[in-house]
Length: 307
Image 1: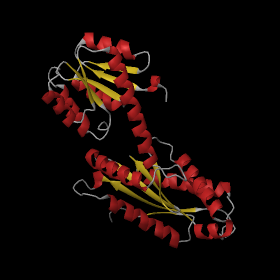
Image 2 (image 1 turned 180 degrees about the horizontal axis):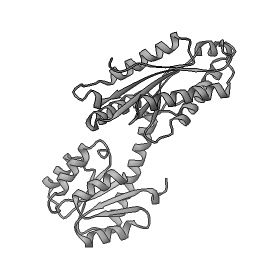
Image 3 (image 1 turned 120 degrees about the vertical axis):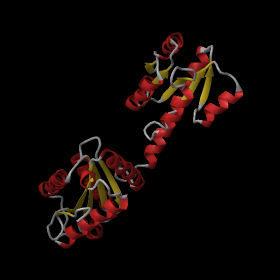
Image 4 (image 1 turned 45 degrees about the horizontal axis):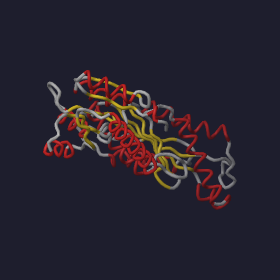
């Protein structure tokens, strides 16, 4: 990624300092500027910068307090923070590092040093993002893996319960996949898994939908702010795609590749005083999937989270 794509957020109430930093970095970075901690937090959440340059001494909310807020927020806690300050005392710098800052730049600012440190920390953060992406991705299909699914489901469940919204989950299993592997070979079986992954990814088009490979021939789709009707419509559309494409499966009684789908829905508004676990949602979708399998496969079944 070229440096011009890296976003750097400057949070400082000193206009002179902001101008100096912005002029030094603007040729190579997308620079975002704010003069208050309150707006700085909003910008960090909205812009997802690769680096935050943060002044310590600001009115109302100082840099240390803002850094603590950034590091306690799941959406911003990984963004590197570099303090830009006139405070050169060792105990002050130690406090910043304890709060999660990665570096200090002292005032008066030396522009070559500023550029060098910004270049280092933005590149390190990009490498961190790449490693995190690899760790959360299923190598064969390119989908989110089970680890990412567990993290995402836990986060979405918490968000759903806080906002009193609706969450649906679908579990998808390739029908007669062992027979497919036995007949066509494991290489074609891998191709089949990748093909199914593409179909599911194309069906779940919203940026907030997460398609995962849970393991083997089993997949999952997390649908935020989606009720039973929405989940069932998507499930039916997935079944229709396989019906229309007629991907050959000589070892299936249908003659083409198909999937079975189990769905469930969490409606927090309907049960405001009830606490739910990720395991509850997954188990219900798994029950629904088992029901779809026992009823002949190539279908979707729904099991409510609560009777």
